[in-house]
Image (cartoon, rainbow, N blue to C red):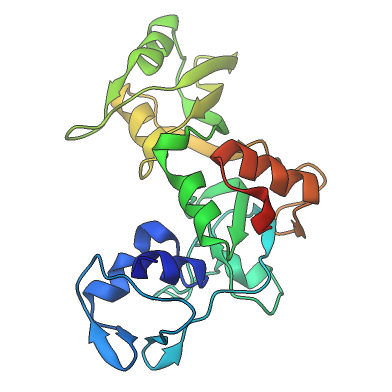
Length: 242
């Protein structure tokens, strides 16, 4: 097994970020520091440690759905001591957020210690739907919608598209329903700024078929069995793992 995959499966972080502690020289395999990528390990025999703490693959996975509140950081720590999403989830297992929501963005957030699932849900290859309710400044025109659906250049080699429905539009502000797949950093905010309609508020209403129905902001629940099966099906994972 690749070392970075083992680190992700241990619940330390997502697979996409599992290379970071390796590059930083924080990982040891059988007592020897490994700081190069591409290393293969034997999960049954090798002892993997982070800062001298043994990393083990969980025997039981947790899948948590949180209705992320406003003014909350999607991270494990914050230098400014702001509220963290993990502060709302009172469980013994270490889980991590699947993807990120900005400090001022609310709505559906999945937390888990299932590294394989988290990796696939975050990877553009699997085209996971992310639906947002977006309130923006100004009157959105049909031409604006056309720009968003045909593609907006938000940076170097970052031309992104979205599915857009107008729910309400007035001279001062408009309400949109937007679906994206890529999930690039601050993607919707950057798209709306590019067409001169800055975001006023942003709420993720659907992620991979999951919604926050029945949950107030700050509340969470465990995923139901059929929801986990749905996520595995969407990402092509073997459902025997759950």
